[in-house]
Amino acid sequence: MTSDGAGWVRETVTLAGRSVFYRRSQGDGAGVPIVHVHGFGISGSYLMPTARLLTGQGVNVVPDLPGYGHSEKPGRPLGIPALAEALLAVLDALELDKAVLLGNSMGCPIALEVAHAAPDRVHRLVLVSPAGGVQNQPLMRALGQLALDIGRESPRMAPAAVPDYLRFGPVNALRLFAQLTRFPSLTRLLHTPVPSLAVLGSRDPLMPPPHRVKEIASLAPEHVSVALIQGAAHALNFSHPGELANIVSSWLEGRPIRDDPDQPGVARVLAIRRVPAAG
Image (cartoon, rainbow, N blue to C red; front, side, top):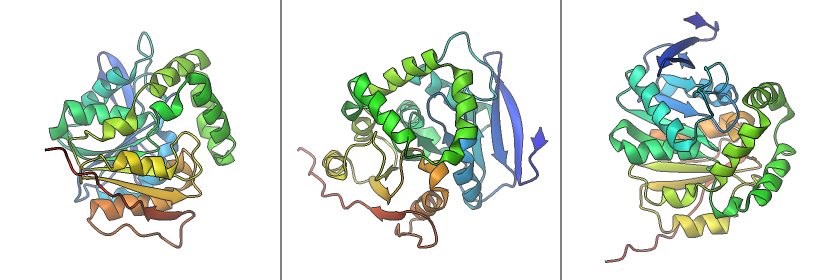
């Protein structure tokens, strides 16, 4: 165990004979632990700006899933179902009986898979920029969306992201990205068994437009909410941590979600007109 001197420790656990690295906030905290789940080809390091702001909610854990960042690589890159199994194994190894899962991009399908497989282990889901589905198909369209998003992200993210992507490898990243585009994240959200909050950025080219989000959300159960951060792109855990942490804290505490005027971006909850369930 090593400390970063800012209230966090860096540790490893062994899963299936391989070392898995994670960051953990120090202090017990009163709330349910929050586990942050990173996107494809990149480690959890870019999630730290938001994680650091949420330590008042309880213990925060930011793992590098197997094959990413400081964690050992398996024999071949894991797909989304296998990464969900690995995330559950991390919860087991850290003795987290129940957690809030806060995913970004590919971390959202991973978190959704865990919630569907083991709903008793997931207190709540926060799905930030839940990529996947028809809005990211075919693959060439998704690659164009990804290229457009790169130009909209903060250049400060490059020192964290570029080494991770190079280590993961472009071929592996392309294969996993193709799998991600086929995962119907927003549709899967319609059947989530736990209270869930989707947080989208208005400048995220991988997300459907707000009117389409409302159409999808109108079919969702009452325990699904959607918030929008005006001015944010895909990796808003890094670019807009203050506003995201404000939204998440408000939702977890049962307070109305309102914009924090002191943070970049303007947050608002999308008003959803629910379609009555059949029967």
